[in-house]
Image (cartoon, helix red, strand yellow):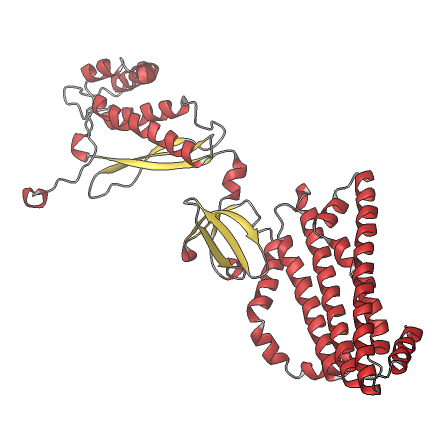
Length: 414
């Protein structure tokens, strides 16, 4: 370049061109030549590096190198050589224009820092994509950690660029900014809170990608699809997406349904309210009639023998039905539902299963079914509940019972 610089300049002088014009033309011609060389080197380097890395990727078993290529990391690395050529030969091109030389050199150094940041970014994204292909990292907030590294990288890059522009050393520049740490903390408050929250969420295993969570404060009810430094994205069941601040996961209360999903069952806890006025003792005729219901036939045969024997031992006067031990239609109905649930094919028999009578209310007495369905999928779960309570509501009348219904006045009906 040194010979070319003097050769072109001397040639122009020999042609009778003034020194000033020769200097400008010399600079422009050298600049064009340098740019052409840089582009040519960039093109050749990219082709060589792409073929080299592609060949290695095909021969290796791991897919990490394939991800590096798909994220265009080799292409960014290829830019380093032409950038180094530009930085090295710019002083020769602008040797007669010191002011322009300083500006161009400063610009190229800033570009070099930005290129380094881009390479780091591509590398970190490749690591993130690779970790997400591994089973043990699929539900971990990898995005959060990648963002933290990138924030530090961008801060260092920004400080380096400002140090180059101002002409102050990086260490001195960073020390000066330490005095403004309070302002920096205020600006990056959400980022710092998110970073701390991400660590706590990960360490305590509070939320994983794929978990079903319910966060009433933010109207979220669905699957976690992304966890990053600032936000957690939840895809609700209506396919909308709710964004929750990451630090809210440790400062507010939310429900994670992972335990239910891992348990092998989904809870059914629903009741019907029976009118108190329809609950009564059963006569022997009533018992004989109810024995026709197969699910309680064995129960009634067994329990009536025990009751009759105990009443005889106690000399109970059965001319009045309340004396002694008696069955009620409500109790037999409860036993019927218990047997019905125990025999239902969609109920998980290894988990809690019961039919219980709750505390009486002003409307009546609630009869609650507490069990767990085998199928946890929402649509199937709702179908199972509907199937069970269709049967419950239809079977009430066979036991002489009635379900409470709010009676509206004629005025209200009109």
